[in-house]
Image 1 (cartoon, rainbow, N blue to C red):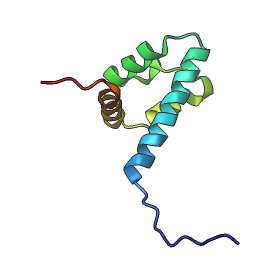
Image 2: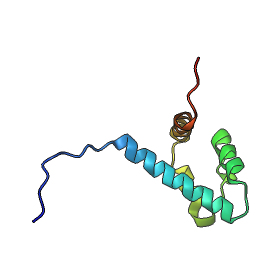
Image 3: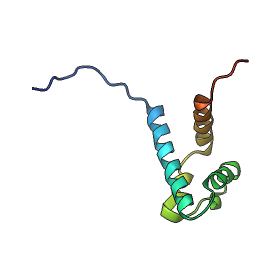
Length: 90
C-alpha cells in the first residue's frame, strides 16, 4: 500500500519560467548549430540588437526566441554565469 503524503510541494513560478527559457534557448542553439551558424555569436547579436534575423527560421527557432523577453533572458544568463563562476574575494 502506498503512503499518502500530506506535505505541500513548493512551486516557484520564477523557477518554472527560467526552465522554460533555458529549454527554449537550448532549442534555438541546436537549430543554429544544425544550420551551420555560430550559435553564440548569433544569439548575442540578437540579444544586443533585438533583430530576430540573427536567428534562423529552422525548427521555428526565430519564433521561439522572440517569445522570450530579452531583458529576462539577459538576467538569467548573467545569474547563471555568476552562479557557475568560482567565487573570488574582494
